[in-house]
Image 1 (cartoon, rainbow, N blue to C red):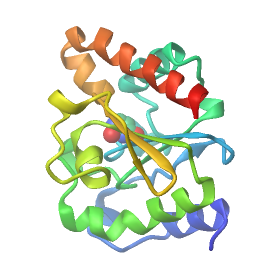
Image 2: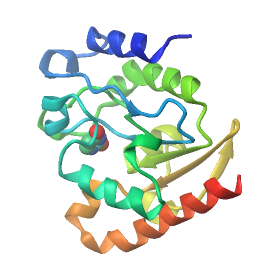
Image 3: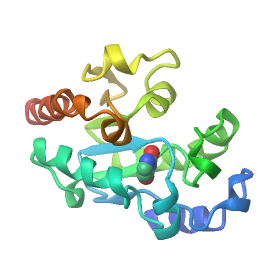
Image 4: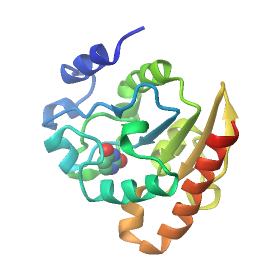
Length: 183
Ligand code: URA
């Protein structure tokens, strides 16, 4: 088992895939190590690459608003990505990059043992819940696996592209709050 600091240091020196050639900063997960809720997105964007902090850019503002719907803030959750380095041009992370990086997420999960894992967007949901997960149809549903509730919501950047998705995602976050209070 590794401590958070050890994992962060491994990530900082990581060369397990090609993304290490183009990244500025690997973006390790952040937040409370006692968090009951862990949110997982796909990969850092350009702002996150520059700052080394998950959701430091415009989609982070949407995320903070959604967390507020669940009565949560960044200080009480843990926020991370399937892939820790920014894919150039903001493309989806390739399966081989996800494969190379997934051990970090496994160790983060072992450190936290969260009550609820929330996948932000299709890429994370298909990696963590089921390869054929359909975000449009299945967002906001819960599944219990290995002592953890799993759910998925639209990615905050999908809401920036289509603000019509905001209200149903806010409802999903209110449901996450209820799930947290009941279990
Ligand atoms: N988008 C992501 O998927 N992850 C981040 O950390 C920021 C934006």
